[in-house]
Image (cartoon, rainbow, N blue to C red; front, side, top):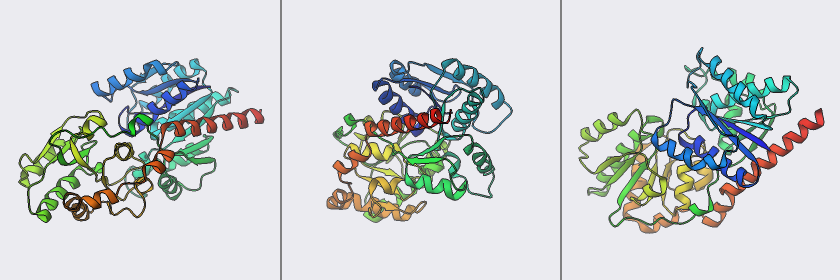
Length: 377
């Protein structure tokens, strides 16, 4: 099959998801291409693109795609349409709100011209983070319209599927859950440096991901334990200066150090325990990667995280509750047996969250959709 993935920003979990699918599907003999935004991402993302170029038989197309709905979208759609049409795909798979719109609208235009192409959409959280009745939630109406233009919606966890139904409405097309997966080589511990920090936060420096909650929880955990601790915040983002100011105000000095984005496995070596304090998530790769690498994870009970760590895992705390997270962090540095207790069963985990299984499940879905399209014609 000829498969094209469309998404906006080449950063974070969506980019990782598409990269893994591209590699798995290329290895299985399919031709893969990517269409995404040209204005986001930096040197780190450029290196990631370089790593997957050998797997992109249909190439990499980058054009300006705004995050918000704007008049410039028309130009982006036209450029995308021309490029995608020339590649003659069998499958158009959109990821995130903008990628989903591009794949379904362009796929529908191709279908009007009697071109057989499967149109799929994976939300990856995105617009589902909005609440009905708040600014930005008008996107729900667009989602309802676009749903009629797709053949299937693919969710990365059961939570995301429930959230879509609650906010957008009943699904009128096929829907499936296909968990994010990671490569078998990542199910090996990278070890720790000689003097690791106690905790680490890895991700975008923005309040949605809970960077501010991490800082407050760390300060409270120090108070509970009664001694200074150490931590790292690894990543980049719009709230980085605000977090630096918070650390100064809380008197944390050099006990929390900020580092730029780096490869996750390199980051894992620098601290004993990962903390994921997100206010909202779908199925974050950082949690899956950490579990596979043998790291203890303390996290917010949001999105699909309980599906990965276990619904009854005591390391989970309510979203936004930095006091409860601080208690878990305090226990992590005082009770080694508790750290072992919060680790999921690794054999069961690998069966569910491997990239090979994820890629195969997706190929089977693509093939079934194309068979249905052919049967209708």
